[in-house]
Image (cartoon, rainbow, N blue to C red; front, side, top):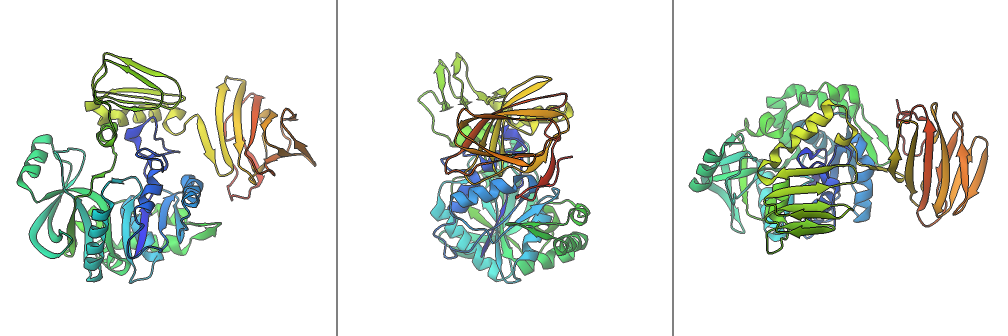
Length: 474
């Protein structure tokens, strides 16, 4: 069995915490570890333990994926980089083509919460048994309430096989997200399950069904993988060939058409944390029903989700609200309207605002930077470089930079010279000078950078050498 972890989502309904460049799967929303790390961690104890996962993500997130796997001592057998998003069916096709034909692929989104891990394991073992017989298995979550944010699966009844209380059943139909009355009718009647987006099947069986129902998709994925290149720990899928692939989900492309689809009920405390209210549902609460994260002072406040990353967040006399504070944005929403947070993200995109994509803190393979202050002619950043890491050798056409070391030791390349800077020492990088910053020490290097110039965008970078394989900014 090979765990195939899909880590390409953006989590836009959890804005402003989740953003395109730092989405929810890389954030510790439901515990100490990130959701990606929890997804891999809950596989411990399975009979197939020890098999390396195959992770699929977009190019922008590749170093976050690699670092988060390293933190939990997990080695991926491959990290496939999608140059463009083409939905789940092509992503899993790439995984199936990269695997051996008889391998069972356990397809898992990276952003789910599952509380009852033993029940999850029992369902996986049954799914693998069904997959060995040639079935294409999906996991149907036993609904706890009528939800309009999920698709539903209707089971045909008449169990095929059983293990640990779960029964594999043929699928009667997949149903799009219903209205509330219809969802309630499904829950009341039984035999309907939330569509979890998790699957298990042999690689060869998935490819056979894809060849039958979506041959153009399979052909495009095969060509894109054949044209792939290896870059450090990553496999870069050919961008032009993959862009020609049809966009479709596994459900539409295969599961709704095949005669071999089965559903296994999953009653394991599942949530995809698709909204702030879903996160409130699974969070610990005070006696007034408030879930408070960070420095929160709640007075006469009830049934609210209150999250702050730094500043004091105080509420008085409110109910059923979501209030989320980050360094550069604050969200206030009625808890019943959190599905509409995506409208905020769409508006930010339409206006070309950076808050849609990035936090004030931006993570890079060498560390991170935090934009402390900015105006038309200057920008101040706090830059942290990990031990042993270094930035690219680069230059700027429109800005100069002043660096002051406040922690650690920095090795600075300035043109043809190198200088070692310690705490309270500084240097100046004129416009057009080649330069590089690296950390030769064993503790993080921290500097304050002041940029001045007529243009301060991140695309004013010309890279001459980069150990992380990044192309020059454009």
